[in-house]
Image (cartoon, rainbow, N blue to C red; front, side, top):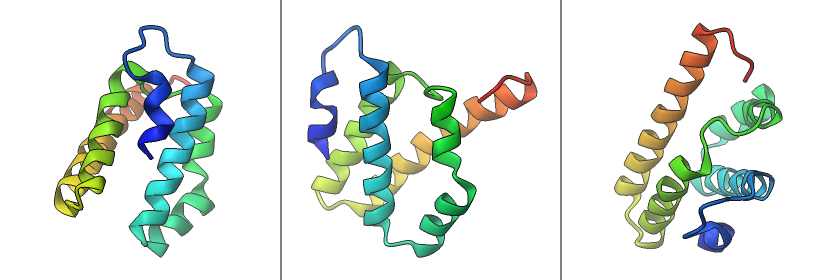
Length: 108
């Protein structure tokens, strides 16, 4: 999974379209690795990811790249508790941004 984000490490101007592709692959891989069929079905039925990508990224690569790499690192180390903690933190930050956008009636 780390190879998905290698092209963006150390870059100042990240190609957002390419980052979105990597981000989608990353999130799909996490869903598969989770083995959580309920979560997978929710994603398919609600189409949350697809809808959020239509409006662009929820948070910019400069914010999420290190979070993604931290999640991958925990998975590679076999530390499921740390991976879960990092995934939860990542998700909470994104949910806060979405909640603010909803309050401000912005498209997302």
